[in-house]
Image (cartoon, rainbow, N blue to C red; front, side, top):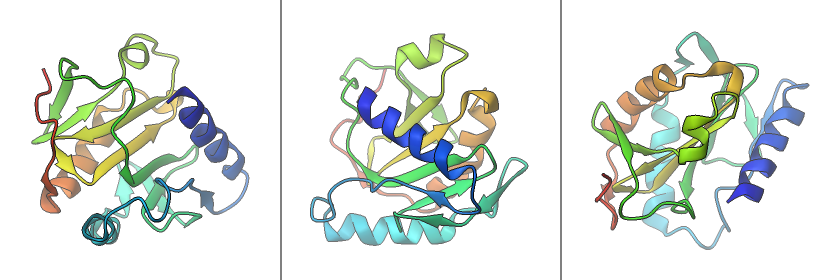
Amino acid sequence: MVAGVVALVGTVLLAGCSSDVAIEPSRGADALPDAQVTACERLVDALPDRVGDLPRRQTTGNPLGAAWGDPAVVLRCGVETPDDFTKTSVCQDINGVLWFVPDDQITDQGADVVATTMATLPRVEVAVPAQLRPPQGILTDLSDALGREAGTPGPDTSCS
C-alpha cells in the first residue's frame, strides 16, 4: 500500500509541471470486471467541473480517473480494497458515502490523504495533497457525485 501511495503521489507531483495530470492505472486492465469499468466510466463522466474551488484538469494514463487543482486532487475509480482496511476499521460517512482513511494519515496533519470508498463497488480512491487538508470539503463534493452514481453493494459494509 505505501509503495502504491508513493508512486501515485510521485506521479501527481511530476505531473504538476505540465497541463495534464498523469494518473496511474487503477489496477491491471484485465482485473476489473466489465460492469465495474462501465460504472467507473459513468462516474468519471458525471464528476463535477470543480471540487471546492479547484478546477478540473485534463488527465492522461487512466481513463477511469480525474483530477482537480494544482497540486492535484486525484481520483481513481476501480481500485482494490486498501491493504490496511479491516472489518473493524473506522470509516467516515460523508453524505451517505463511507470513506476509509488509514489511521496514520488521519493523525499526521502533514501527510497526504488517500481516502477510499467502502461498502460499494467499484471502489473509488481520492488522493488529497497535504497542503489541501482537511479533505472533508473535497470528499463532500465528490460524495455528492458518487451518491448519484451509486455502485453495487460491496462485500465489506461493516465500517465501524
